[in-house]
Image (cartoon, rainbow, N blue to C red; front, side, top):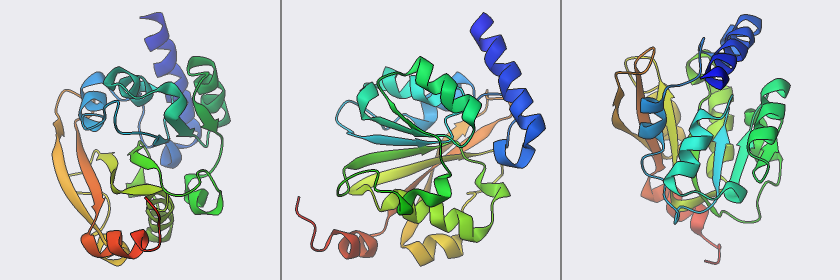
Length: 203
């Protein structure tokens, strides 16, 4: 209970300092964590988490069977990054801008089975959203997926961006008990993108 209270206080302070960058006044609840990680299991392989904050989704990933050493946690906030390193010492924690994923050689090839995003995409410019998605999918297995939650009434990634990147969005469900209530979308590659990016890649 004490840790939960401390996490909420730290999250609120971060939101006060950068409301557009944080996008929420408190860490995500367990219902949302269970929903956004529902497709993950021990066979998923490496997972990237964007904007993990205090690690609510990270712990849910471990509970689903993901190995801690297979997690790459990309967190822009230095305070959150330090907290994550202490809580998940076997994970790779990178204090960096998620919009620059494609500019870093995080992996050789495309071994990632899933990307879990806690980023506030609705507050970001279309160019930045495209950079995050394109960077994430550059490391993704052909059948891997990007999981995004939103407090809004529809998918936070506009259809023109999805179409331009060769992606499609599927509503997985809504976490009504989360505060505030949230929806989770699975973003996956259309066959044309899979063929384009899989060509020439040895499996």
